[in-house]
Structure formats: structure tokens, C-alpha cells
Image (cartoon, rainbow, N blue to C red; front, side):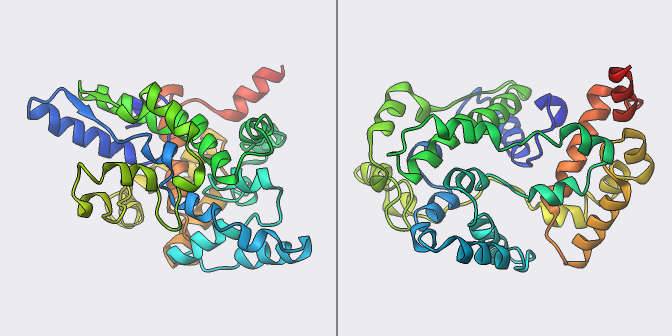
Length: 312
């Protein structure tokens, strides 16, 4: 997967695209249509529902919001409800723009930096992954609704830098072309003119799109429950991927690379195994970075050696 992507994109969803494309090619199908863009234009992700309820707690005084954020960080991360509530309220004490940017975060900055070596921490300490999104939001009109701001982030970053990249590359790996009709320029322009209240309607995402399709599609197709385009990553790390995980994240491998602290990584794996935290995607991210380094930087690449050479 990482060889085809050319970058350490830590998401198992590209494997789905690859396998679907391979099956299509085997069946003699050379062109597929994808629904990519529908959620990003018309709403449809859980965070779009969450942001529509921000008003329920955003009125709180700053001290109360800090308390809410602190309590959310103590929730049990082993349950889906705990993880979602933690992400929803974890940045309640931040600015509006920071709250929106954090909807895209899978882990807290401090938790991630605890996994880095001192050398890597020193090198990237002044770099914020949120900054491009914050800059983008600052350029938008203050009159823009929170939902429309979030959708704008989806289109500029999540869609362009994530979904479209892996959809295109993994389909091409199977010699299949994937087309994205939701991103037809005329439809994108139309979606931009539709108010957010017609996109996220109560708990119903893509409301206006679904209503428009009622004359053409059965209701049980339009309104069926949303199904994520992912993989059972937590089960994989406890089963089939476990030998690979221990090989990729071995103490010797991490120490030679110089990016991640072997002791901290071992502790994270142990905590995940014991159910004290839900760190499957963080562990998978570490694996993807190391695999990418092996594929493209070589087994002898050392961050510390490169840093010293650059400083010399």
C-alpha cells in the first residue's frame, strides 16, 4: 500500500480501493464511479453532526469549558462512545477555529510528542499540524457558519490531501480508472450555494442530496445506515498484523531510525493490549512511517545522522 501511495498515509482504507479495483479489473471493468466528495460537499461525517450541536455547550463560560475539556480527556478510550465524546469535547476550551481543526485529529499533540525521540521533538517543536487549517479558516468570512467552515476544511484538506490521493493511486495500481462525479465543477458550485441547514438537517446528513434522489432511488437505499470505508484495524493488530507490528516497531529498528522512542512505543503497545488506551491508529501510523522509511529512505537512514550532517 505504502509503495503505491509514495507517502506514509496511515489509513487502511486505500487497501479497500485496491482490492475493489483488482476485482473490477479481473471482471474486465476498467472504469469505476466513486462517491468520493458527497460527504465533503453536502455533509455526512460524524463530525458534521457533532459541529451542529456545538451550540449546546459553546455558550459556557471559559472556566466551565476548560473543566469539560479536562473531564473528556479522562473518558474510557476503549469504547466508541468514550472516543467520540473525547474528540467532541477535548478542545472545548480552545478557540472556534482550533475546535474545528481538532475535529480532524486522531490523537493529542502531547501524546504524540511523548513517542518522539528528543532529537525529533527538538526539530519539530515549533511546527503545528493545525496551522494550515487555521490559516485557511482565518481567510474565511466570520459570517460563515461553523458547518460550512468545517466543510471547507474537508474539501481543501481531507478530500484533496487524503481521499482523492489514495483513491487515484490505488486504482491506478490495478490499472483501473476511478471517476468522481460528485466533484463535477457545476455540482461543486451548486453545493457551495446551498445553505448548511439543507445539508445537515437534524441528525440527517446530505439531506438535500437525499431528497433530490427520492424520485430516482428506493428510500431503503437512500436512507440506509452509513457504513464506514475502513478495516478492522484493532483486530488486525491483535492477530494477523501482530508479527509485522513487532518487526517494524522493534527496539533495534526504532533506535536505528531515531524518530520514535522505543521505550515509549513499547509502553503504548502494552497499554493498548491491556485495554488501558485505544491506540490502534497511532500504532498503525508509527508502522506506516517506518515502512515508508524502509521503502524510500533505505534501511541505513538515520534521522540523527542526517540532522548532524545538516548542521555541520
